[in-house]
Image (tube, rainbow, N blue to C red; front, side, top):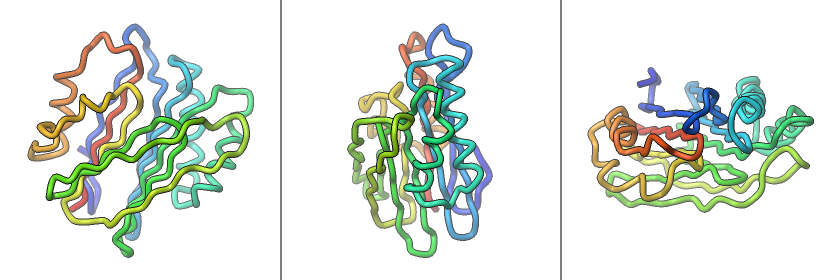
Length: 197
């Protein structure tokens, strides 16, 4: 589990069966006002997919609180000559008590409140790396105890059952997910569980 002030984070990641490199990359950041987590999935798999997803994560690392329009613009610049990526960015604003999810492509996000209300953000088609595109943004109220599951397309919705989110802590959630995963999976797989205190 990652040490942060207002959230618990646990991450499960594995490459596609038979590959050494995972084409998914992630980065998270926290300060007194924000928690930000980004997940990129390079198109295809293997080393070239990882190169693209890491290039985008380096953009996010350089200025994690940059607005999403600027992140898209800068990401497109670093992807020239590389494979494209799909991207999801979750931002928790501790002061305003809101979360924002910005995405392009099929990075998924599910939110689960303490009342076990489960909401799936619907992704838009497309990817970064061809031309500048706007990311889809959605917002919601940030409530204590809310769980966020951010995931690449190696994770299917039925892998994320209600039973999984009844576990006591984020480590138990990713451990249980890993135990149930088919180890002959046909895609890179990343699941990031974030629980807001």
